[in-house]
Image (cartoon, rainbow, N blue to C red; front, top):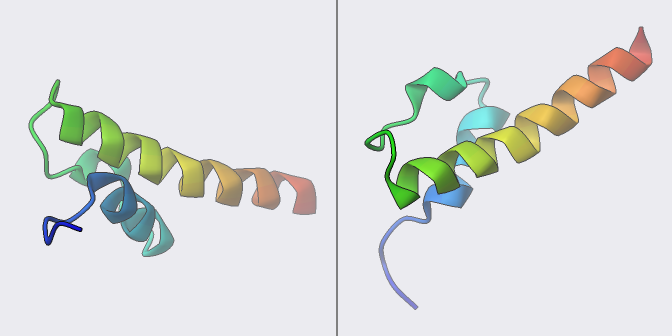
Length: 55
């Protein structure tokens, strides 16, 4: 196991904290950027779906 932070998990955590996707700390076009964005979208997309169901 590595001690490096997992960009996917960091993105998920950011979404849980309502940090916008634009705050992705990784260089655009990098694998880490894509992983962070995917993690963020997984959580943010779930939250948005839940909000629209409540309407």
